[in-house]
Image 1 (cartoon, one colour):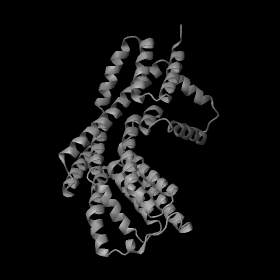
Image 2 (cartoon, rainbow, N blue to C red):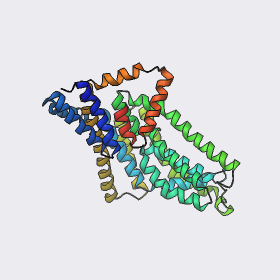
Image 3 (cartoon, rainbow, N blue to C red):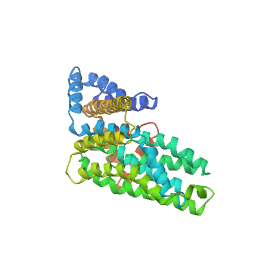
Length: 352
């Protein structure tokens, strides 16, 4: 007869094996939990499935996820990113590495408005990357700028990752937003300083713009900033300000942001019911993925703990000669390795 601890260890090993083969994470978690739960708990596993599914769907913290995702998709389809990049490009025309600086600033602002990583990387890859290559930028620098700037949406509020982390770890999302805002802005600033520094040290990798691109009337630049930068910045300040000042919960602020994004799209004359329908569809798909991840991870972790697997893992780590620093270093290495086959959503659900 196989012991419960052996079942729990087998469950963990099989899960790692299947995700490395490329199986969907949410359904792999659910399948492993149901199979090994049936072996260890019998028919009670199906009651657990119903309870965990209901608890995830009734989680108030997760309400803000579809609202922020919807806000991001509306802004993405309103061609606001194109306007924003061109206005910041004009404003930074005399700065070394101006196109790289404009790309990073656009990524940071757009990430703050959406919290979506893939959309920013894709759009800036189509918009800013060709512009930098046409200006003679080094391919490595141009691709690095887009990749680094596009990932700022993970850290800068309103990050979807922070909402999932708060729901998983039982931590206040507002406190996470307050804690992540300064590091996120500081990271964006360091990226910009690096781009300017590399342009000064090696002008060949980031050449200056030609004179005809630099000689732009000041009134044109101000009007471009007034019609593209400031409306989006005001929307971001309204959403984040209400959250950080305690005037609204993340869900309420996300609802205001969604309404504001629709009004911005209408003001830019880029709102359409086809775009609205597509945004709703993409929001539903992303939200469904997140919810099923929570359901699968809840079932998996409950069965894993019931079988004693959690105690085995805990005893293993306690047996290692680790202090606070080495334990933090080990967790960072594990997360780095998990980042190769997995997305950040799966890493949070599994690791935390």
